[in-house]
Amino acid sequence: MRGLAWSRRGTVWLLWWLLAWKAAPGVFSFVSFPAHVYARPFAGLRVAARLRRGLPAAPQNGLGDEDFTDPMARVNALLIESNFSVSLPSAHPKTQEVLCHGDASLDEDLEAKEEGGVGRDEAEEEDDPSAWPPPVASPDARSMAYFYLSSVLRLEDSAMLRITISYPSILGLSVNRRIRPSLRCLRDDLQLSPDAVLAVISKQPAVLQISPHGHLRPKIRWLREALVVTTRQLASIVSTFPAILTYSIRENLEPKVDYFQETLGFTPAEFGAMVRRFPSLLSLSLQRNLIPKVELLDEHLGLDRPALRRLLQRVPMVLASSMEQNLEPKVYYLRAELGFSPDQCARLLRLSPQVILIPLDETLIPLIEYLQVDLGFSIADVRRALLRFPRMPTYSLENKLKPRIEFLETSFDLEPMALRNFLCAAPQVLGVQLEDRLRSLREDLGMSDYQMRACVLGLPTVLTYSVHNNLIPKIQYMMDHTASTRDEVLNMCMAKPSVLGYSLEKRIAPRLEVLRVILERDDTEPVELDLLKRVVGMTEKTFINWLEMFDPVQFDFQQQKQDQWDFL
Image 1 (cartoon, rainbow, N blue to C red):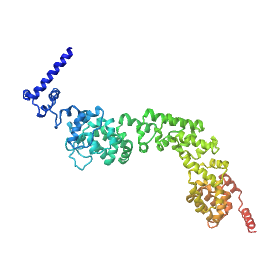
Image 2 (image 1 turned 135 degrees about the vertical axis):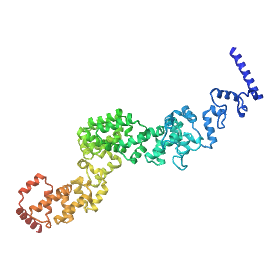
Image 3 (image 1 turned 30 degrees about the vertical axis):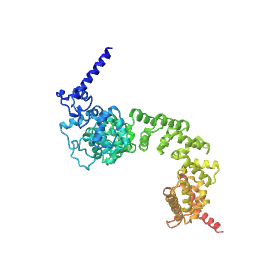
Image 4 (image 1 turned 180 degrees about the vertical axis):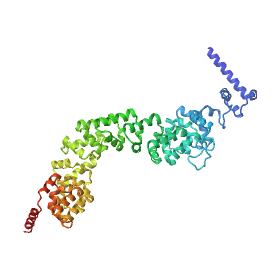
């Protein structure tokens, strides 16, 4: 009952105040209110609240009372007043607060600098209207960070939504004292174009939260010196991975640089090249990612420090692979399932570092199963094939390996066992465009189908030799120094295909010069092709023994006798 009485009494007093205000506003002349205040019911209550909070009796900039009490309404009124067509999204209360009232704590460092005097870059410049970033001339809605970023710089809606939700404090920054100096720092110190600067901000808005002169510029200078990179190279790193500018030098970047250079032995230039190749390397945790993965590669794959450095230089992204889902299962599969020793694992990764990045379940296991089930490889055959052609797992099984194996089978009419033996002997032929290579052997080298089949089956690796840089010079050299025709040399190669596998500079030419000496022939006299065929295939020890027992007179007699039989 007492509450009801007080409620009735309050209602009566409220009505009395209302009538008094409407009927005789001059009675309350001890307070100077604007005229528009008396035109609204209950306006006096709002004004009294203003006065108690130490605020002006009426809102500024022509805004009404409800515009002041509702911050978002105040922003919308500013939009209408400035003829903006941008609508403010619904945001977190903290975002609304910094939108409408700003966040003075974010500019304290700049204000302190201004009190002690600022340099040319930190002072507000007299901006050219055509300069970039565009200046803000009047303190209207355009001077608010949100509308400057969205409507003046025209950041995409997705970037603005990310800023509004994840980085609301940016919206309270001063445009002229914080945002524009940060943009100018990125533009000048990294020599980025305006579009590239906006791309950096869109990817990593937190860059705007960094003091441009106290932290951003010194960090850019430190990165350039620590990574031994040029300004253009650092700009490429930052464009790819802008978050690098938000990391603490002392707590984050320096320990990682020291670990790679002092513990692993990378030079500054080598480490800088790794970061250029994989900028996200510096985002990995030193204790949770880098050190455990390096220890795994070192202990279980037999990689010493030089081999480990070569691996990381070629595929630094291996350090971003998951330990539980990628590296540990792969190491177990290579060691336990396929039986690779640590030295063999090290050789495999040295020849083809990309193997460590190949998905195990989607790529490596299906390839091994195909070799074993469809082609009849044993585990030992698989190991030999991978060590002879380490890049095999990097090829698509369905799009490259299977079509090339089928092409070999049909082109040379190979039985399953012959196909298996062929691939065990030279798995590297699967890395060659076989159709083009056979066409070149036929058209450029002049081989017949019969000669080509005999040479390929006798020396499968001949398919991996360059026709123009390897085979044609060998054939031409033997033609010139043995006075033989092309067909005679090709028939000799068909009878002994291994001749094509020897080096022209290290085996064929030196052996032929030795034959000239022991036969006492000058450069103009040819050497018999059959004699060259016999000595080219000898080992060094066998060739020396043969030279000690060689009798030129007996050889000439036997050669003359053979010539007579050939004549008859």
